[in-house]
Image: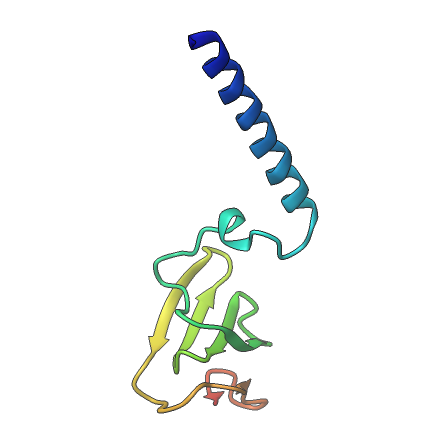
Length: 105
């Protein structure tokens, strides 16, 4: 009957809400449900991250997807992608100490 179906649906919704709350309390649980990836994000694991000491809004990331990306944290956007420089995963990067516009990978 309609009454039983409505009660069953309500019980299922309550159970699902409880599961989501429990998952949110555990770091890393159901990560894909809690985080929406941006279009310009890496397609694989990020292996290295480096802040620029001079331009403190710039963050560089290297990834297993063979790309290096520069991020402007003040706008939360990717401002540059270097995807033709590496033929393997990017495992390390660093800003040059004396030339802060130079990124070493």
